[in-house]
Image 1 (cartoon, one colour):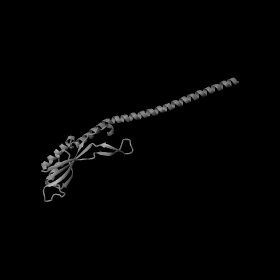
Image 2: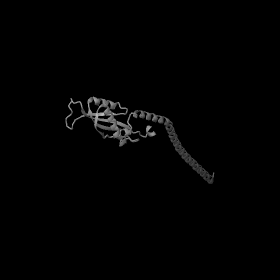
Image 3: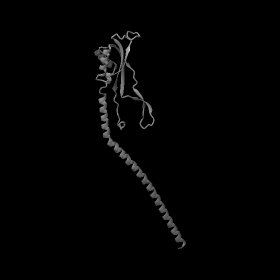
Image 4: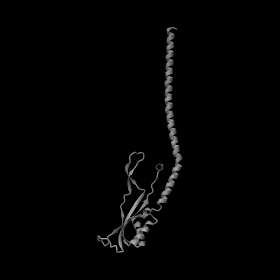
Length: 213
């Protein structure tokens, strides 16, 4: 074998080596691309499966929402409507009940009530965040000054607590009569009393499906 033949063999071997290296590099690149594609396909399959699972739960969530809504309607049916707790309407209701019991109303005034909460947990948040939230059940409270006997007061309280709409007696106070500091004598049948009465109005919120989930 002369020098030219050896040179040709070296050239051929070098070319074969280059071809092999090129094919190896191409194969490695294709393998890497295939691995990325397979990973993306797996992620897409997982997302699709999760989406299908959520879609399958929609009828169940809708049924649950309807059931909860029905329960809320049943429990809130006894609560007054918004126009029934306006001052004139509410006072008229209590005046009628007191008159039926034999009491005389001398005064009525609404009482201020804090109807907000300040603690909430935001979604996807680890720390509780202070926030003012709208209450679904709004409380209304009034103070009435009455004149009458204890027996009449007892009838009045029964009529309040047995009213078709939810009414609650929060407190009763025996007041001085005639503008003086002294209370009425125990032997005197007519007493001056202060009675606090409250109720709630339901302000139905708009519930989103994601909140139910």
